[in-house]
Length: 635
Image (tube, rainbow, N blue to C red; front, side, top):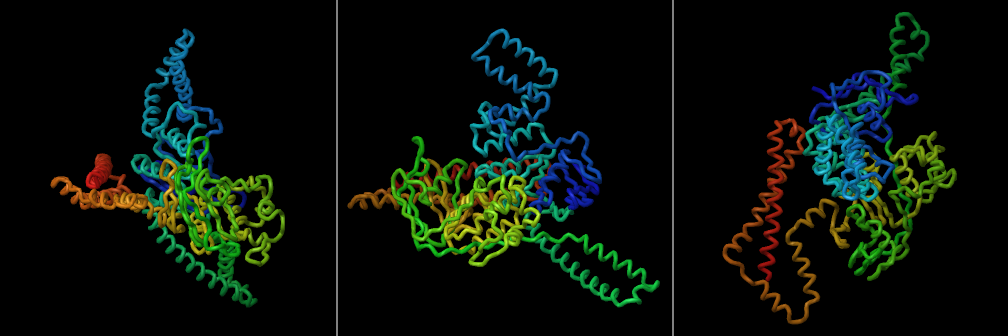
């Protein structure tokens, strides 16, 4: 039985229909991704689902007593609240009682006065009357499951943990349907992977909006597209959607071409004169008028952003060389003993947890920050253009045009002048939006304006700090294509795995305790390289460079140290065992990602999930044993 159902739902703002007599149904256990271009009304549709916005026409049916929770994009303005207080705020009425009871219990260690004990007794009585103890247990369960520090202030948490707290606030209501609007924005890779695993193991229904294609591909069992006021449903994953969507657009283009040809023929006929106005032809005239109305009402596919970079003089072959550089603040080391060499044409991705120091590393590479030790040498003829994830370069009080080019009517791109209205239309800004203040723009529009501003600057070194937030998938793919063909040098900070894989040629990865390691390729290449047990050999090779003459004999002696027969047999058999376990793990993950997986019996689902966890644990034990035996063999 459906959880929620739309029947001929319509909603318009001004003369543009965001929803035009649409139908939609969400069933139990589904993970539905809502896709569509920026500004098509995805967030508005989500607000209708949760009951915060009413449609102009049509009906929205909800299952009786259905619980719908929404994960807000923004954290509360009051950052002085504790994690426990924020989570209990999701429980209307009794939530404030639980929060006060929690604080009173904590205060007993310092103040056990009669007044405090009396207030504690009053709260206990009220909680019993409101079924509060059961709800308190739900809060504790969610805090434990999401591994949250209950008594820390929200202001003390990282961005990823804050998002996890807001998820806990939504989950504590035990929703049947969870609504997530861009849940991966501002999460680091570890946070995104945690959220993926959590949602894969959750039994409720999920409807989410995301631009993260890897996240979408892993989670979605169905894709719902909002396109020009209509809703289309595409069963299966993202790859299936792309194929079917391309086929549907081809059919639509063919239909429109045939319609336009027939309309043109009828327009020629009507202009022939008196024959068209004879009584026996009135039906044909009415049909032509209907065709004219259909043509004028047709909503064309939204155009794509046109991206072109302003070329600058080529930089020198060497862009930056870093040798044994370290950077730290207040006694803590952010980057330790880091060396790299970046040459013209390199596209470097920078990966790391939130707060690891990615922006600090960028400043080091750009020469804006002096290392506490080591050296940084910049190349020649560098012209830098910077994309700022905080959008600090945009003045919210100024108009779009003033932010782009200080009010000038033209911009210069590759030596040619272009009118600012035409240039901004390349970035999907209609003429009426050009004089709007930046404060009125959506997140996606602000990012497009930043790109428009960035690409007017001649640059041979492009620095982009989280450029993918709030961009729709079509714009992301165009940006990928542009950066892949860029002749200059790129430094890219991103948590978008697909974007990294499609753009960068090398990755610099923060791997703990100030270590920044250099890998060839993108995100998936890094995963493959870091997981190789033989990576210890590299460290040994590096170590031999500092060994004194004559030490080779000692090393050789150490290498030929024999293990016991049983241990050697175990070591020889480990590679095959690891391969079998990895194959089994991949197979189980593929089963879990399948659209029909959570439609099975709950016992079968739990059995498969438990098996995946068991295989993962055994895999870790085998890797640990391999390292142990290799270390013993090396002496």
